[in-house]
Length: 116
Length: 112
Image 1 (cartoon, rainbow over the protein chains, first blue to last red):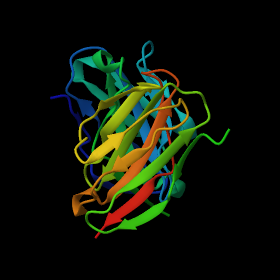
Image 2: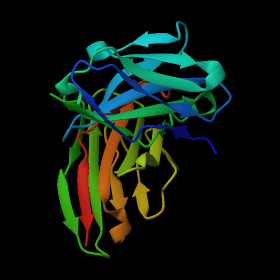
Image 3: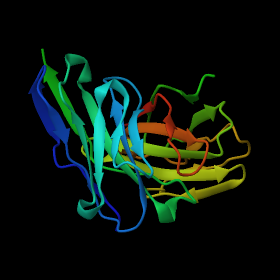
Image 4: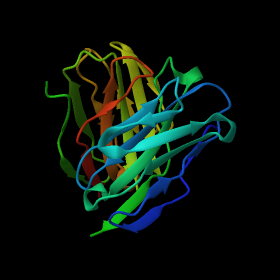
């Protein structure tokens, strides 16, 4: 079955530290890839997305992600985190075969806590 | 635009009760979906719709019904609530099937 794995369930960093959150998926065909963020008490918001082209994509608030097809990975990075980045982060995959339905398969989520 | 709206924000039910979670979007999106969010499990797709009059099951459809009579509205019905349905429910919509999905604020449901 198709699945998305986020390896880090809970990450604690100090401000200005660098961040990398892992995401791997188990689908061999064409995929659309997303990272969503959920700030405390709020709904999910799109951080960035990859459909095609340059595998290094830049999103809002200084986040970026790199699609490595050979590793089935789409890791999220930020060079220097801020306290306001404290949130839960979700990786999501839309397999091309599901493009007729728009189904998104989500990872389990990673809770990021940034200490001031 | 209001985007995706959901009502109610909070709800407490007793086992066996029924209720409808409302979802509406004003962006003329053709695709809408319902997810439930549980700790450590991410979001799981319950039902989805690719247009008015068309719905289909997602990953965890049991105990839930949906209908899509208009482009704007996509209500989720719990026929007989069970404690296992205690969760946070999110509605989402997108303009096309593989595009970015916009999420509503969620409904936190507790079934006693």
